[in-house]
Image 1 (cartoon, helix red, strand yellow):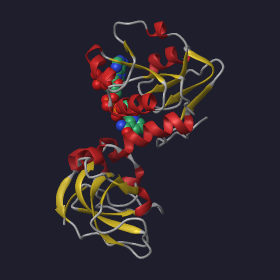
Image 2 (image 1 turned 90 degrees about the vertical axis):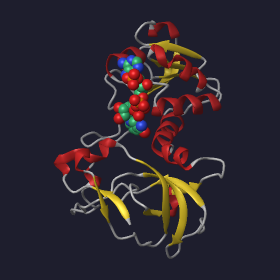
Image 3 (image 1 turned 60 degrees about the vertical axis):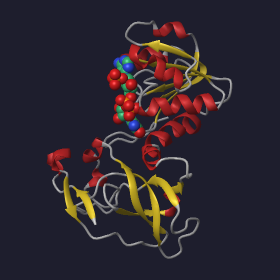
Length: 261
Ligand SMILES: NC(=O)c1ccc[n+]([C@@H]2O[C@H](COP(=O)([O-])OP(=O)(O)OC[C@H]3O[C@@H](n4cnc5c(N)ncnc54)[C@H](OP(=O)(O)O)[C@@H]3O)[C@@H](O)[C@H]2O)c1
């Protein structure tokens, strides 16, 4: 099959090359997916899992890309819950060959059925940003209906998912971003919008949950807006300022940091 491979860690994305690779075999509980759309994150080139397996052995040439949408073509021994011919979307394992290829082997538990009226490209763009938004809001932020959420970067990849999920969950959503992002943020479900270059962030009043994708000074100022018992959720590293009487959660693992709560 045709695939994009990387072999040279120092070359970054410039080292990505189109190559011929063997089609993957289905291990126990795997599904083989014929890929119709895939998602790739440039920072993958800095992830150790792009270069080594779980025992830290070199696994190059490796195929990057982890988000996938496609059609099931084969099932491994013991695989249940999915069938050949089914449309699916989901996430390929960080330590295995990925989705910039014609076929990928993925554990069935990391896939979900893709409804017929959802494009493959939409399906492949959802998993990482959607899961990041979901985990931040509901698992770490413990969002409840009726609470207020300040969503930074609400026209961006993660922020737009956060705004939609929070609104769907019955929260009052305040989006932020650049002046040009206002309409997009409102379309994604924000009921109010703060243009971070021209409006005063402090005018939004007290907030139950801040979802931060920006960090720095914006994060520090946002921490001061959080109500007693509220939460600051960061996906850009450990919070530099914590709410006076609340929780700060950084839950995206990076190479040299640990999730903190
Ligand atoms: N995408 C993911 O699934 C994911 C998962 C985990 C962690 N992260 C991390 O989360 C951060 C955001 O990722 P993303 O994919 O959502 O990025 P994105 O699509 O670029 O969205 C970020 C949004 O925030 C806006 N923004 C950034 N700084 C701003 C500022 N100072 N004032 C006003 N607006 C500002 C950006 O506007 P401009 O483009 O105009 O600057 C953009 O609309 C990154 O650090 C990323 O590594 C992302």
